[in-house]
Image 1 (cartoon, rainbow, N blue to C red):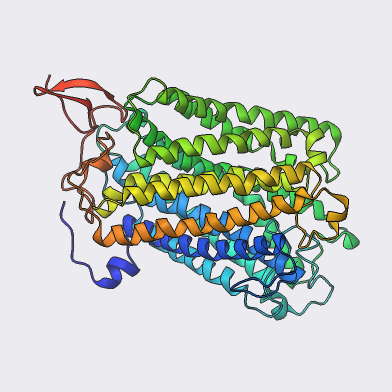
Image 2: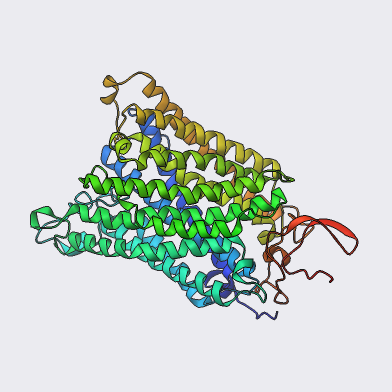
Length: 567
């Protein structure tokens, strides 16, 4: 396929190449992860040693503590997980997996990144405005998120350039970016598939990326409207959420969680797609239940729209409706349990190659299982009333989103790095990174479950007064969690070193298909050039045809999608 000459600016900055745009999303997402991780180090250190001077920071007052926790949560979900899992991985893989040259709308793809970049600039700017950032919680609940300027005659410009208002503006920009990118994903999938690639022959990752986009599009509207009303409350003196003027602060909770709960699946679907590519490749078996997985995902999307109020069991919800949302929450676990069991069935009896990407896939299954099972507990309104706003919720949240975001990303990184870099990483450092991440995360999050079950509330900057009511082991458990969290953060520098060194000095891959996989991206050169393929491939079979076959007198256990076998 012919390509045209590009300047530095058109190739690396204002690029319309999906791979460069994927790298841009990844770089910004990693920078935001570093910021959010540093904030986590600061407030975790403070929780374990509330009277101590924090290295690299100093002392921490309660308001700044709340600001750091708020910013950490918002950045990790909206400016780390979404750009890395959805935008970066989707941009890297969808066109090459579909056997095409680029996204359907390259200019729109470029625009989506720069709108996202602007949103990142705005949210970072919110940390430095007068007042010192936003401390109202990452869920933006009013009246806490609106009371800074909630009066009949607010100072418009002061309110607009306050931390909370800038966070709301940044979210609006980020959502607009993801909508533009989502449209590209869907149109590319529908219109730019390689010849012979029917929907039943698409890689499961492409399905899951589109499921993520569809879930986002169906759920994001109410939270955009809710955020706009919240912004007007802050800067124009309206009273949408002010009970004194006929508003309802609980309304925002409904609008937010109608999006907020499906958002978990917006992030989960890409990671499930990554696992769906890695597990068959290293189990050397066809993906078990391909059509069942697709059907179960569609059921999960539908159910995800009717379970939002399980986040509001203590907000005065009607008890009969609480039962409805409890049942819905339990029901939605069924399709996801079926998907996980399909992956386990794929592993079972396979000729397993325990390469590094497979370690991350198995680690994800083991860790995410704990998050899923504890979610069933919190989905019961009777248990949730007891556990709500305790550290149990914090542990559950991390056991859900950490494996989705970090295990999902690192599994993808170690699997596709040889393809997109043309080099191999250091396997020993990769394994050291895996075990450090896996072990230190468990030691960080598990103690927080027990603290929550023993009644420790969340969102407190100092538990010193609380300790007089609790056992001594509370202090030790918080110290264990804090030390493990710091070690978990430090472990990521092993990956960063491995990434940078391997990118420039790693051993060049001896084959374009080192894992002997079947999907089309492995049939492109390593790294893929602008345009991806010299000639558009043609597809003859599904992407998971593994099993010993004899081709031209040679035995092998894989058949690429684009390989035409002799009749």
